[in-house]
Image (cartoon, rainbow, N blue to C red; front, side, top):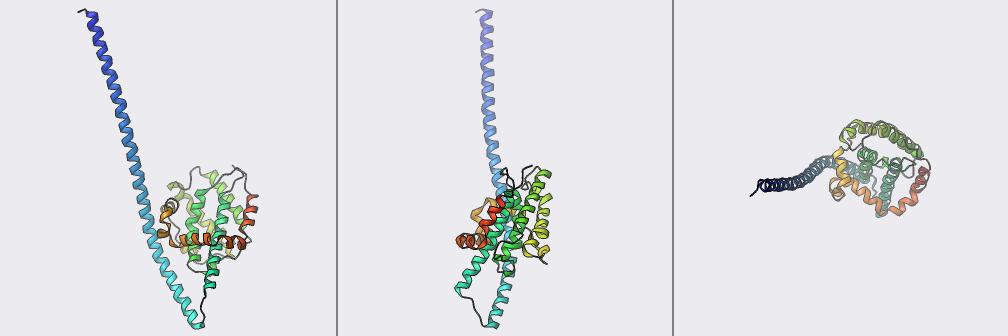
Length: 277
């Protein structure tokens, strides 16, 4: 057997082994990548569970406090009815429900038009969610809890001005911060300013004055708002008053659109969007 033959045989075996090693490396890397993807999915699921648990805990505590306040108002209302000898009939209940739904629909329209701020079609769902974090407890829950002082019979005269200021706020935010407000760091930095804008500027324009108790309102946490956005099936349990409000808007959609002036507001707001950055 010649030396050349042995050398050729050795080289062939070496080449085969190198090829086998590379094949095993590719297979191993594929398996590792698959395991890493599975771990990432588990981490994501774990994070969502933690968010849901934290949001549920916060909402249970908030609901308990809200139930106590509503019970106190109901007791006062019943005492007033007993003294006056009056009662509410079914027509009054329907009228009250429509008024509540109309109020929430007006706020939703204002917030929707602020979010759709740009002539280029830019939207700000992060600002919308950050705004709902304060509007839900400060207005929506008050309305659905029976506080008539928060009811709106029609579009507030300052609605277009509020939309304009809100859009300017969003445009400034986009210039100053490249991240979405749903980024935890951005939320912590800017959401308090969103709250301040609603409590000190927008809501006083809507209601004619600043509410004396607004500083005591507890804004919903980011985790709660993520749970509201991502887990709609849990809204009835985790956000009962807000859920009832949304259902009321759906139930009386026709009556609300006919009596609120929202259609006209949407048309006017569409014509006054801002140029993009």
